[in-house]
Image (cartoon, rainbow, N blue to C red; front, side, top):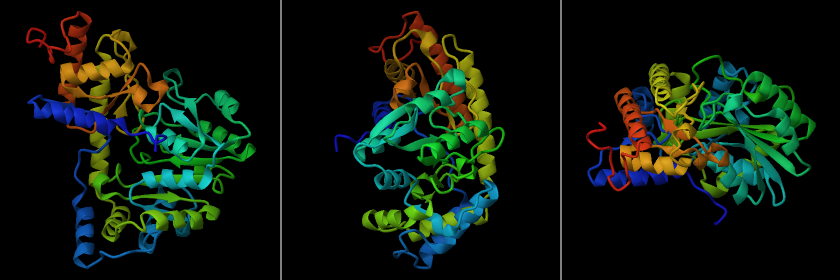
Length: 399
């Protein structure tokens, strides 16, 4: 159990809620969850399934209709060749990470993962008994990996490479040329790839490229995706993986041995989401784009902060080293207690996140504008020494 990590976002959320209970006004930019409701048509499909009595067990890998809908969706939108038999449905997308790593990694194996990156990658690698090897993502490279560095990290013990595009926390997107080279490395060194594409449909420019399209990658790639982000269905817990044929039966056994199956009514809602795509999805992405532009512009006007424009997902990853106010964890705590803004230190996503904060712009435009204003006022006052943790807020003069 000591090898398990956590998602610090939930810890920061608890701190922010405690401050709210004391009467503080907190703007939440820590949780990576769309602030939109699930589209009504999807909700109706779930309710209809419940009313029909679909409250019983299903096949462990998922109902045939949803597996078919997922395969059809991926083949149409990402130009893949997925058979529905390769699709395994799970309660949320995290189990795909869990099952893939349990299926592939033994003690002594090594797995390469992005740093900064989603913290559950390294947590699950450690839990499986393998050694996690961080692959640095640097701002100067637009948060794409250094391919020469990647080659040096691959050893005879390397079993798996984890990719995430669009990426949490940076909003970076892996280019097609980078994916081609990673695919070449994977083929040459006989490696598995776990491609986390949970944000694939929240893109602001260009089109999403899946490594599964590259030559020879279908037999060595696990594609991870789900409904939480695209369809604002976080609480429904619905995700899926596309597995190479040799892994389908073993991973299905892992599902049977752990969660048995995914709730039937949830799967019916997911089928409706893919077969009758609600217009609210496009509206949501449009809103995220507008929010991104406001947040990036506002942060870049603050002395000591610089922020690249993310190409996907709904996070910004501003560089805060110019503030000169301490490390990322210190700035996170100060902004929470002194400005009332809940953010995450970049180091919550790995050592490579030092000097950065992650802000989720899955919040209202009004709240985001207020948050940027508060951060700017706080930064100005803090650099002049007019804000203290004891005061707990910016002084009225500074406001």
